[in-house]
Each structure stands twice: as structure tokens, then as C-alpha cells.
Amino acid sequence: MADIDHGVSYCRASCAKKLSRDETDSPHPAHQMPRPQKIVACYDTARGFEADVSVSQTRDLLNALKKCLRAKGLSYSDVARALHLSEASVKRIFSEQTFSLTRLEEVCRFLDMTIYDLARLTQQTTNDHVTTLTVEQEQALADDPLILTYFYLMLTGRTPEAIAQEFGLDDRQQMTMLARLSRLKLVELYPNNSGRLLTGLRIRWRQDGPIRKTYASQVQQSFLDSAFKDDDELFRFEMGELSAASAKVIAKKIDSLVQELHDFVELDISAPKTEKRAFGLMIGFRPWNYWQILERVANDMGLNAERSQAER
Image 1: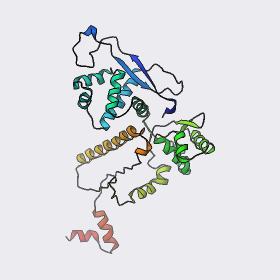
Image 2: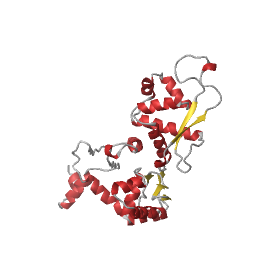
Image 3: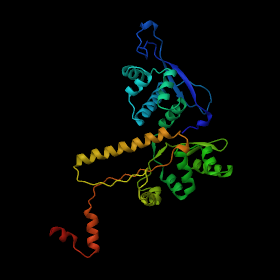
Image 4: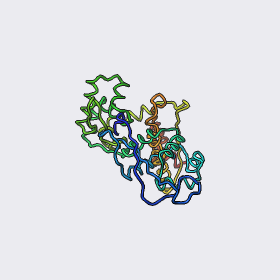
């Protein structure tokens, strides 16, 4: 993720020469209608000046905007009401990618965010590919809890500067952490004890890799070591007999829920740390029968569980 402390530049790219219908519903002759402009928000930390951008960056910006709408449960009709436009006009603006800067600011204001926030989210979304580390990288992280913790903090969107300030790291400690991650090719070093991730914000740990072998059981035990009674806690355990087709539908819904969690994480990554806290979501779904528990209990009591069940 690019270091945002260098700022964000907003730039315009002219659209295709053909005239498009106006964003508003006011009837005007085509020759009087203004040419729409595509607005692109982009980071340019390396050069620090406004640069030309491609159509793909415009698409990334609008995809991030759509993701914000979905995360907040809003539709084009909600945007239309807020902007005093018809739903057809809003759909046309999104499909033709003809946002004026003013219109983009209005939509962001409706979403309770700034264009700066949207640009930042666009960069994060673009870098939100899932990364699988090498076995050697995982092993190095598993062997060094401090480096693993620092890497995790960067995955949450914190900059090295923010990590140092939050946890009271001095320059030597900061350089040590970044240098080790750089040697593992997980971070690119910048001057002044700074750097950026060379991975996506989401890591898929290897199923039988060093991290899972070292920490999986600890994480599960620690997470489930709760009565789940607080208002912001939730625990459900349900079971039932399903057909293969129904089980596939449930699995897809679980995948959708996990993706929705990631969408909200991206949306809230720029929120002040005082307004958010870390949450965990643990989901398990597999063929399982409560009789497996009863059978073990019966065997521990010296009973023949299979015969007892057959005699019923």
C-alpha cells in the first residue's frame, strides 16, 4: 500500500470527443451541453506531482465508489434522491464514467467521506489482491513474533510512522523491523525509516505452512475463550441435515459474508483508530454429527455405543 503521507493529487482527464447527455435532467439542446470530464484520484508518492492517468484508474475509482455504496447498503436510487437526480441519470453517470469533480464531491459527501478518503480506498482496493507467501517467508515470520506482529500491523493499513508512534518504537527499533521485512522481500524500504508493503493487504496462509502449524491452535483457543455475552459479541452453533446442493449454497453465502467483512475493513481503514477496534470472525462449516460426541462419551463409559444405538 502506497505511503499516503506524501498526499494525494486529484487530476482530470478529458473524455471521448462525442457529446454525452448531461448529468442533470434539465432539457438542453445537445450543442449547449457541456462536455463531461472523467475525474481520477490517484496517489503519486514517487514523483509528487500531478500526472496523467489511464482509463483503468478511472474504473478503479468508480469501483471503489460502488464498493462504498454496497458496504453501506445503498443503491443508485438512494444516490439519486440525495443528489436530486433521476435514477437513470445516476446510472448513466456511473456507466459512462462522466463524473464532474463537483458531482464526485457531492456523492462522497452523501457517503460521509471525502474525495481524499475515496482516493485512498481506491489505492487500497487496487492492492487488495490475496498474497501467498513462500514457505521461507512464513517460516521467518513464525520464528520471530515481533516481526510477525509488525507485519500484521502494516497489513491493517498502518504506516511505519503510525506504528512507531502508537507503540513507542525508537529509530533503531523501527529500522530493525523494516530491515528484516525488507530482507524477506515483504517491504520496500523508503528513507527516514519508512516503507511500503510488497504484498497485498490480505495474506492466505498456507494450509500446512509454518504460521498455521505454529499459531492455528493458539488462535482458535484464544478466540473461543469467551462467553460471548457482550453486546458486540455473537456466537452461534447450528446444525442440520443438508443435501449436497444446499451445502454448496451455504458455502457460497459464507464466502460472500467473508468478502463483505473485507469490504468493510477497506472502507473503515482510514477511520480514526479511536473510532474502531479489532474484530474477529471465525467460521467453520463441514459434515458433522452430534452422535460423534455421544459416541465418544459412551465409549469412555465402557458402553458399546453402536449396540446401544441399534437397540433403540
